[in-house]
Length: 396
Ligand code: LCS
Image (cartoon, rainbow, N blue to C red):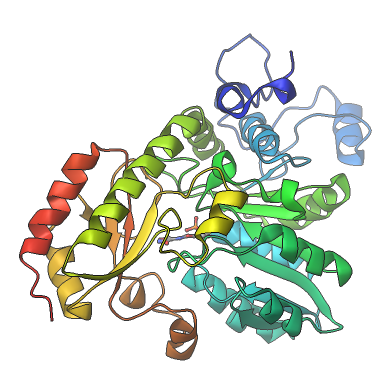
């Protein structure tokens, strides 16, 4: 049985064997920068692509290949490309397919530095980006220009948890000859598979749920087609932002428990979101699993779970949020998300501080918005911790 026939829970455990020489149950860590050739002809043949094999770790490594195979299997893509970070993955994918004069449409609710990458970095090379509310299909359609080459969607969006209709946006991309890239970091392939809904490329920050243990920075690009894979591989080999074997090993190890962890993240987040929504010091809560979320029905249809991230605002706004962040103990005050531990942070002054105020406001990132990444602890402990912090909050 190949892993292609396995259900997702089993694939998490078995996908990606890499280079199995000695029958190791787990792909070994090939901690080497370079690989010996059998003779000069062998080396020349490898470089010419006449024989398969490893040359140099920036160009390929068996431990990295095992991870790339595993994630391609989970997302339903051709093959993955392991990158040094989520930002390296996004940068490489954009740089592969964009030329001077091209136009990109991006969700306005994305990880803050992505707006700087597109609106700042790529604009220097004559590439223009329109940031739109990608949950509004007419806004996406209206933003299309004759030179639109890519549509970049993050759903649910960081940190507002805006949900975008992937199948409908894929149609818009196809009708206009643009490639659609989806950042699937917030849900992982356990809960959402964009390639099955028509996207061309999936990217992830491996730093988050896929690794799951807050001890690695990494990224991956997973294209649907072999043709896109080869273009991306060439760009990544040249740009050099590849993941190293030890980090690839750790992420692959993390993926073995991904299905279990995602189920627990979803259960816990649902419980915490419901608790917060009922609390009299809370002004509003955004979690796609709450019927009050404007895209609750879409999230139910498009995903098999709503994820582990919650955003909310307290009635006392930013000051009240600061009190809460300073008085919780189990929830750690830190950026990042998707680890087994609960984290709390303030996007407007932290992860999204680099965005212009105008774009932040348009994206709905209120100054008082607090983001929680719910871990896999006992939900009663997470709630008790929040309860203690909220007791100290003076609600306006
Ligand atoms: N995509 C999403 C959706 C993210 O949330 C992040 C990082 C990235 C890409 C970039 O990945 P990295 O290069 O960090 O591996 N998000 C972070 C956050 O919300 N807090 O700290 C990092």
